[in-house]
Every structure is written in structure tokens, then in C-alpha cells.
Image (cartoon, rainbow, N blue to C red; front, side, top):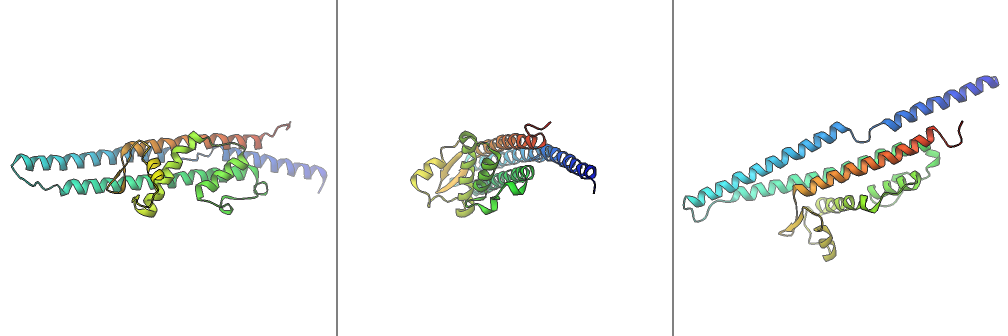
Length: 233
């Protein structure tokens, strides 16, 4: 092969890689439609839970007004149980979604840098899936996830662990862990179990959106530098 053909091949490869990197940069980490659907789902479930509770309270009051000395409040108990399980599922889903966001950003970062330039993948690092992916992003992306940005998400993961491993029971938590758990708005303890209300889920959802945007920007910056390296003419 002539030198000219060899040069053309190299130029073509570089062009194809730049085009691929451009597509990688423009790929949405979180599908906007999915986010809007989940936001809608939160509103719908909150409306349903509020309606269920109001109906059961009205029924108990109706019995009391009719002179029933021991009104049947089993419906309130059932509605409360239903609400607890629904909100538990919200927290678990958000934690899984956070992992998906971080996994996708790790893939974009490794794709931009080249696997040969990333000695350790998230699966090869010790720790939980979220911490391992954070290490990869910060180490090889050369940016830091701010403490204030990560703090509410770490709280989300702590809550998720209690729900997944102990079904919401807090008896195995140390006093300082219990105190830290209930510092967040929308988290309380009732009968030895975590109680989660709509405010907590909404704030956790907003924290997830913030870090998704932050990671997208920083990884996209890395991709931009790969497309147009400093010193390239």
C-alpha cells in the first residue's frame, strides 16, 4: 500500500471516530420522555393515595357521626400500608435509575477515552455499584462530584438499603444512623419502620435530574476534548 493510501486510511479512521464521538456526545443519558412519564406517575400515585386516605377518613367519621362507638378503621390501615409500599417502590426505582445513569456515563467516558486508557472498569473496583462507578467517572473524567450534589443521593441509597435489606425496619440501625435517616424532609419513623412521603420522593427525583445533567455535561466535555484535542490543527 502506498504512503498516500496509508494516510488516507488514517484520515478516514479519524473522521469516522470523530463522527462516532459526536453521536456519543449527543446521546441522551436519561430519556426526557421517561423522566416526564415518571413525573406523571408520581403525580398520579400521589393523587390516588390522597383520595384513598380521604375516603377512608370520611368513612370513619360517617360511622362516628352515626353513633358507632367503635368505627371500623381497617380501611385507613390498608390505605396507609398501600401508601408505604408504593413509596418504597419509588425509592428503590430511583436508586436503580441512578445506577443506570452512572453506568451509561461510564460507558460514554470509556468510549471517549478508549478502553486501553481506562485500566479499571466499575466491575473491577471494590464497593457498591454506585461508588465504583463514581470512582471511575471522577478518576478518568478528571472532575469531582460535589459533596452537596451527592449528599441527597447518598441518603437515597441509604434509605434504599434499609428498604431492600430490612423491609423498612430500622431496629438494626445505630442511633446516629437513625438520626441521619430522618434529617431529610419527608422521612420519619413509625412503629419501627421508615415512613416516606411525597416530598421526599419528589426531592430525590430532582436530585437525580441534577446529577444526570451534571454528569452529562462533564462527560460531554471529555468527549469534546477527544474530538478536538488541544494542539490539533
